[in-house]
Image 1 (cartoon, rainbow, N blue to C red):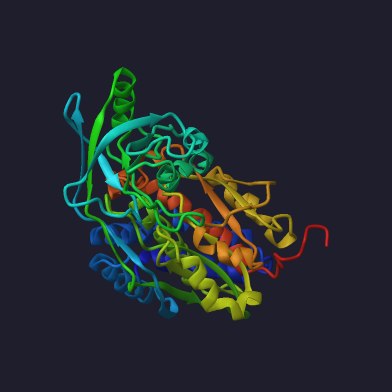
Image 2 (cartoon, rainbow, N blue to C red):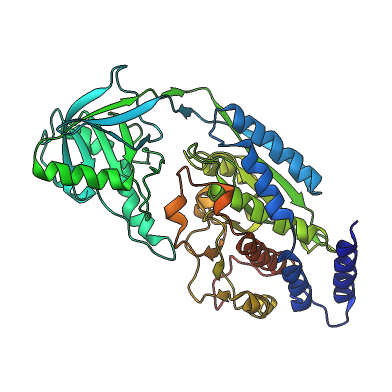
Length: 458
């Protein structure tokens, strides 16, 4: 054990043995918070994970990430480390290109969207029609775009809480609507708040759209604007080539480990991030950071002289980007739903946390949370949590309470799903601030007897 760890353990031991110590000991939580601000664990995890590269389901890098996750959880001292396999068809990117062939030939910056079918080997060439919004697409009559490539150039609003993404991302799922109106391909302005040319990928499949029937790709933001300007002056023809393919027999894994509770080990606080990532970058903020934040927070708690009352389970969810983890985790753990007291996923990057939303936040045992978080410039919101993360959505719908640590997403969608999602964009101090917040919240919830299923006032 290093000298700083000796001092940390001794300080926390003294706090835990203090006569004033209780389930919501503000001093123990404060010690965790302060340790987290200078602890290298999160950064080391993130640096190591991003060296593997992009981690799409069905790829060799994904398998290496699975093995990395198991090895790292064991090395950090987690118990019951294991991987839970589930069937997950995978989509694979082949060669891809797009270009204006007339009136002024030029290459376009594009990236295929997950789930897109391939074009014929020589591509698809057709005139484009440029629409300003997804609403314009769905309002168009049948066969309005017969034989054309539809381009939706709908900008995204920059917001601190990421709500602009929810309003804009519907345009990424427009391939089926374009096909219904006769289109031969679909291009969408990247769902991004940035102005850089690097296109942003993402899945083109949602619950109401199981398979885009025409090839679909995202344009770099300047390229979408360029097409709109050109189309306003006269006819424009574009050629699109995508060589994507799918494997219906792939497998993904949810990987987990536990910090065993000292008094109520059968009651479980679940936290995590998702291990998979899109392939233009190396998945640093989406969602290597979430994996690093939650694993580092739990490992700090594991170093306490006495574990909190409840068990903490850290999960590396295996397939968030194209879906599947949530349903698989719910199916595998349905029998223990009543034992999972609260759950949350970190999946909004690595920039500073500013707000915690927590059911039963006014419970006496959780009262210290406000004092612990105040030095981090984080407040406990009076607004109840509504979303704990995509991979825990199944648990939430099944009745498990959630909490959320809200991060500043002002620049997140400049980077998300693009080639810029690398370790270079991560601020180490902000990453550690998130670890400090997560460790404080998880420790106090795990060391309490609060029933988060109880309605306020009951």
